[in-house]
Image (cartoon, rainbow, N blue to C red; front, side, top):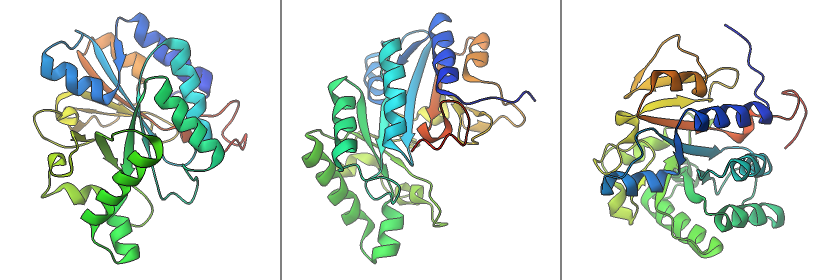
Length: 242
């Protein structure tokens, strides 16, 4: 297997190659709306960005997306020890994402919150969304459950609940017909840090570590691309950019 350098320039090249292959790159909320209207492009990439550790690195991706004139959904944590979304600099970055027309979603950790604080998980979600909406002047329509280090699964919150109960339109992995993207798309993620992984309609493709642009040769009509700003760097993994 060839070694991949996950530089910012590499990501830029990958996205540009997918555009050149005839793919329209859109946000999660746009996917939901276009799917409902029956107006999805014949070849569509839904671009999701999970901001796990660094909003400063997310700004690097934001600049790439602006250069390529594409939109994404950025899922942002509220309780990360690694970054404060309400700090002076991070608030500016999130507001810039909104100004440029990207969707902002909530990277939910409500099971972790409920366990650590001994509070009700539903109350945590309602409060977090209200705080997020008030602080950034938006209406959160989508959440994606964060996988952290607690050993708990935040996605378990949705086992017996649906997004509409909380005035949401979707959860990143929900199976409601209106969204259901993980079960309907070809999913590619950089979450293994040093290589890509993929799922075909929810089934992991073992041993397939091709890059997103390499998958475009298969002319798949719908690709769901998940990237993490923390995976990328300017020159090498240890360049210490936070």
